[in-house]
Length: 322
Image (cartoon, rainbow, N blue to C red; front, side, top):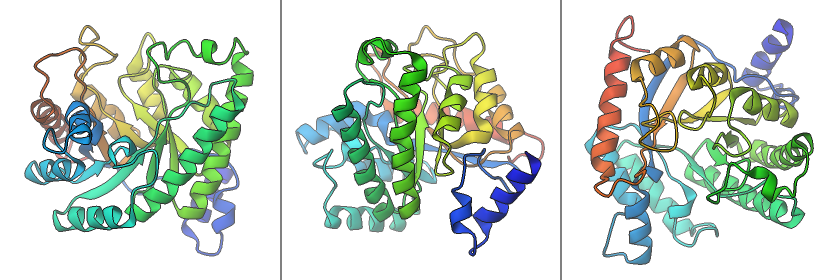
C-alpha cells in the first residue's frame, strides 16, 4: 500500500506521468502540514438566490454573494450551478468571463460548483442525463477555473433517504455499481478538463463513512473524490465518519448541526477543526448554512456565526494556524 501511494503521489507531481496519476483510486495526496480556511458555499443564500432568479429586483445574485465574501474576508466561494442563469444549460461565455473578472477583482477564488443528479435510479435514461449534465458542468467549471464539481449519489426529493424506491428495490450492491459506472465516466471527463468530481454524502445512498469509501473504491478513479458534508452522516458517531473521510476529501460543506434539522446536535467546531487538522487536510472548507424551518433565517447572519466559530477554533490550534 505504501509503495502504491508513493507512486501515485509521484505520478501526480511528475509532468511525465500524467496518465499514471489516474490509474486507480487512492486517498487524496497531501504535502506539507495541515492548512485549511473556512469559505462559503453559495447555497447558504438559497432563498435569496431563487428569489433573484424569479425577479432580478429581489434577493441576491451570485455577484452579490461574491461581494458578501469580499466584505467578510472570505477567500473562496463555491458557486452552485443551480443559480447560474439558464441552469441546467451552461451559462454564456460572457457571463462566465464577467464572473471570473468579478471574483478576481475582489480577491475571491471560485472553489467549485455543483449539479443536481440521481445515479441511484433504475431508470438508465435518468442516469445518462445525470452523466451528460455533470460532463457539461465539468466544462463550465474548467471555464470558471473551479477545480471541483459536486455531484450527488442518489435522489434529491423529500424521501431521499429511501433510495430503494428510486432503484425499484434493487440490491445495494447493484445500485452502487450503477453509481460507480456513472461517476467513473464523469471522472474520466473531469480528468480531460482538470476538474475533480466530488460525490457528496447527502443522507441518501451515502449516509455513513464506510458507505462513502465503498463507493469511491468501486469508482476507482483518481479524479473522483469525496465532498464531505458534516451534517449528513447519519450514524451513532458522525465525527468518526468525518474523521474517516478526511483523507478522501476534495471539498466540504461545513454545517451548523450534525443532521438535517435544528433538533440535531449542534456542531462542536473545536472538535471538528481538530479532526480536519489531524487528518492533514489542506484547502478550503466551505460553510453551508440552511434555513431548516427558521422563518427568521438570515444567511448573512448565520454564515458569519459559523465563520467566527470556525476561525476561533482554528486560532485555538497549536501555533494558531492549521
